[in-house]
Amino acid sequence: MGPPALPSGAAGGHTGRSEDWACPLGAGFCAGGGSVTELSDLYTYSSALGDSESDAGIFRVDISPAGPTFQWSDGMYRLHGYHRGEVVPTMELVFAHKHPDDRERCREIVAQVSATGGFFCLYHRLVDAHGRTRRVLTSGEAILGADGAVTALEGVMVDLSRTLQRETEESAREAVAGATATRTVIDQARGILMGQLKLGSDDAFQMLVSTSSHRNVKLVAVAAELVQLANSPEARNYLDRAVRAIQVHGRPNHAGGRRAG
Image (tube, rainbow, N blue to C red; front, side, top):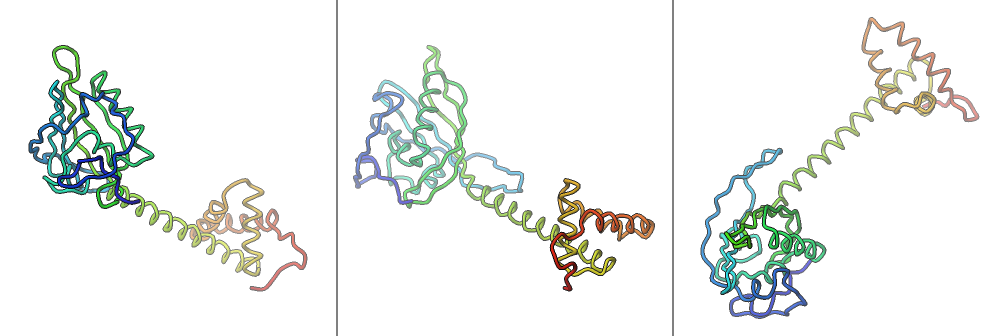
């Protein structure tokens, strides 16, 4: 996906197409960018996969009758694909960088906490200035003043893209390993039947499948039981019984009897 169309006048020295956009907090809150002050990146991140580093940024938006005052850390600029000084943060700019499919939900959350105060946390996609889609978690607090009105929004945005990619890769590796282990066990069980009953490879496999269907248990479970018995010298009699049971319940049904293989 390409970079978002920036709100008119958002980038220093550059203008872009202004999209149809209604500020959920009212024009007084969203108009202009206010002043921008520096905020340092002070955060701790860790994941179950052992990640201890991730792109993140800290933000604060102070609300006053004169307009909002944005404070972005360098990390917030990086997440959006900028360097400090290239753009003036505004609510319009923030929402322009939300993924189109997530934008409305983000607006609703911001509108809700801006009206009631309290903590917020949302997982969404962000499209930076280079068109790169990041999967981020934004959490923080809408702070209430003495009069009960929200006076500031502050929080942290963490890029989870790297962690999610690692998790996906780990799940894929586990799935492949599991499939390989399953295939190995089934092949071992098929070999046992081929040796015990002088069957071809296809007929031995069909016996396992038929037994699995007859017992209403997974094929790999039938195979694992047979392999476990074969690996236990003390269970020789049980192995013979198991093979005979499979021979009875899993006899090939196709014409032509046994096939060599």
